[in-house]
Image (cartoon, rainbow, N blue to C red; front, side, top):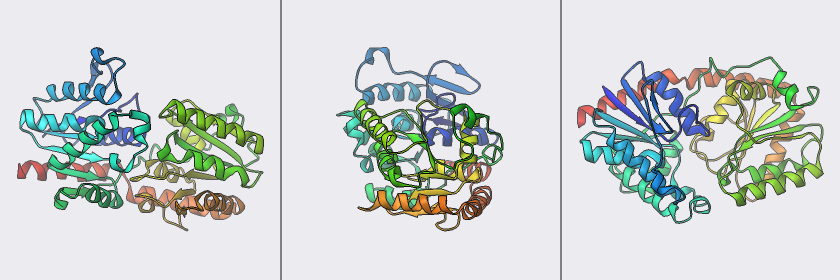
Length: 383
């Protein structure tokens, strides 16, 4: 079975959950199918073909530049029997390949443009183009993979013309041999953390979706003994970056022990930070699954997260962490939940142990790749 996997992010250029998903899915799928990965970037090696936006569009709207990559990807898929795209950045490439080469197109929805209206702030008129690309691809795909049950409901709600029998749930996964507790503390010491004080950890992009602004306001009043560590970068727009910096500066005047790491850290360093955190926090206002919560759980760390999208399918409330409703009291409730975990380290350790067991038992990438390959076979049989 010759499969083309289409993505914007692929190592070493991974900045979000979709990129992590594709990286590990490709690793496992390569043992099950003849896999060719097409991603953004430069060069060609080891089954990976990289494409860059056309130079004629340098300085143009990002959506137009994305479409130029999609056209290049589609042109390079003539030897594939099936194509599988991830995110709107590659969905149109899958749709074009379906039409051009007469092959089935499967797409994985990691998020949905209609549920991310703040993207208009980033893309301008390109948001209308990204929304059109997603709708065109999703309504024409031979199968759609949702990364959670909640995501499946969102897909069918946003795209009612889609046949519900074509939408399949295959969860995100986690490599629990890689993401596991790391007892070393050299990274913490280099950052300047006080090893005698607990810390709250956030890892994610500076974007409306991730709710970083809510977190910065919520932690103003939490236990002053706790440090706050923000691994936060890749702001969507200069305006969002400026807003984050202003809130961070205000927070710095209100409490000590505040650390901001704006650059992408190597995975091993993130694992060490996750391991030693008293609590990991995910304040997203929209999250189809939230793979970063799985990463924290696999490292044995309790999670405080918003009760949105697929997060409740990952974080078991009261067992592996605490869930908070995104409502008018969101920031206050977030602070209360963080203080609850910080005040009872023994309970936090129990939740961390339960989270690790849940990640190992239910979210292994090998099983997810097998389910994905089975879907490929089913789609090809029906084609």
